[in-house]
Structures are given as C-alpha cells and as structure tokens.
Length: 125
Image (cartoon, rainbow, N blue to C red; front, top):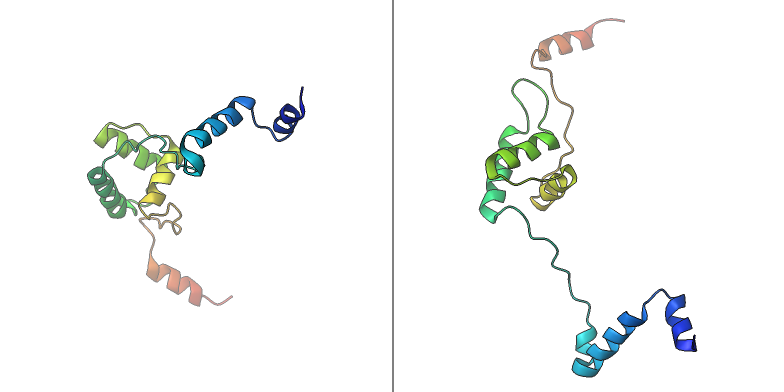
C-alpha cells in the first residue's frame, strides 16, 4: 500500500471516488467538482393536490365532535383522495412544506361548558 492509498483510506474515501473526481476535473475543470443538489424522489402529489390537502387540513383541524386532526387522519385522507401512499413521517414533512404545524393546542371536549368553568374558578376554597 503506497502513501496515497494510506491517505485516502485514513480519511474514508475510496480510490474509485478519487479517480472519478480526477477524471471530472481533467475533463471539465473545477466546475465539474461543484457540489450538486441531489434531486431525490419527486413528491407524490401535484401542486393542485397539495393546495387541496392544505385546504382540507385547515378546514378539519378542529373536529366538531371533539379532538384534533392527527397525522394518521391526514395520511388516510391522502390515500383515499389521491391514491398516494405516504408514511407518517413524510406526512409531517409535507405539512412543513405547506407551512402547517402538527403541534396544536389541547382539544376541547364537545360537552365542555365555558360557563361551568367560569363558575368553578369563582368557587371559594
């Protein structure tokens, strides 16, 4: 093993990768070594579908019968409406992209009485 192999092994880079970098540099110069953004997997929803999803979430965030819309509800809505399967962590990532937060205030029970709460606060100890 020569000094070069020892150097690239000590910093955790394969010889093949170094050879690719050298080839790219020799063919196109420094521009070829620029870090390019990885495209990744494209989103399963179109822009129109994302807008429809955002409208649904905003309209159903607080349920009339009490409780809140949760990530699993949104995941089910996406599948039922658009036929696209999402994992729960990707639902939350999608909500972040739509400038929505899954963190909400505590839900209110449907039989909750604001008057009864006010009366209770006034109750002498």
